Length: 157
Image 1 (cartoon, rainbow, N blue to C red):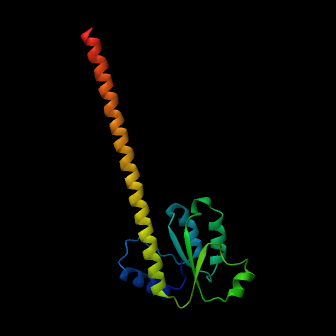
Image 2: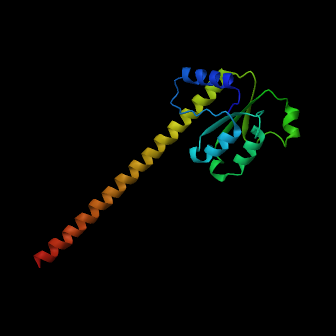
Image 3: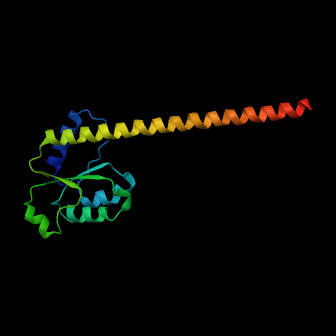
């Protein structure tokens, strides 16, 4: 979420050059993000704080109240001094801070680590699902075999 169009385009060009398997949605205001974020349920929110209208502070407070977004990572990118956060209720809990200008190498490393973690979690989930399917199939075969044996026994009588 970045209100400055040139900065948003810079982020977009930088992200595209990383060739990471991510789907990014670029928004120009906190209000726009608040309208869509609950349905999108992103893994990561990168946001500026100083924006006209609903600012990033207000957006993050609203997001924090949504339990469905509790596990979303947040990176705040701001040129504001630390005292500005204190005056607005403190820095968002569990958020990372990047000062402008953005260190894109750090951001790329962070996003690469998130992708790797997500991939590992997905692979583990798939292994668990595959094991559950194998167990269910084996139980089904065993039930079929028992039913067949009972039927064969009845027919033999």
